[in-house]
Length: 140
Image 1: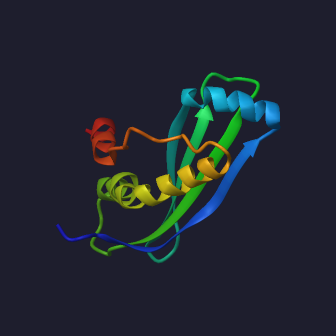
Image 2: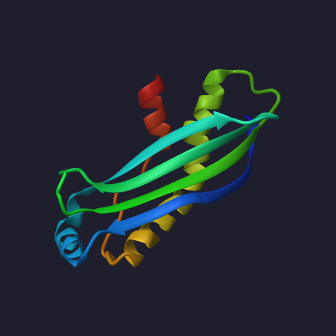
Image 3: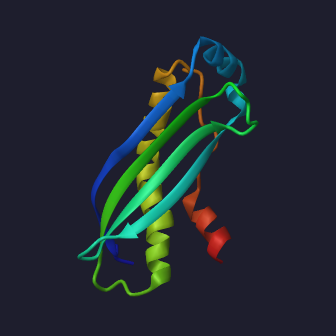
């Protein structure tokens, strides 16, 4: 199958890390193993068959602790859709699966760099996200 899209540009749109104070830092250092990685993907059509895809990664405390750090990265990717692409399902797969598979290693590295530079060098993301599998589970 020929590729029905082309990535025109990609960039970090927003990146943030917040740890309120040293007490919070020390608390988070002891509890960061309880943090979870969340991913959210949104898209919006632009003109001339362009689509902006925003992939948001958040590494956050699910326990709702008072003392917590916040790590978030929003990554924008602009793609050009081939004129022959007519099926909405094909576009959905490109946005949620194909593009994510290509860009994810880069954005995961950027988020890890942010977390490491924020004083948590031991953090690793053990599980790799299988976008193909997630897409099939959700839409098959």
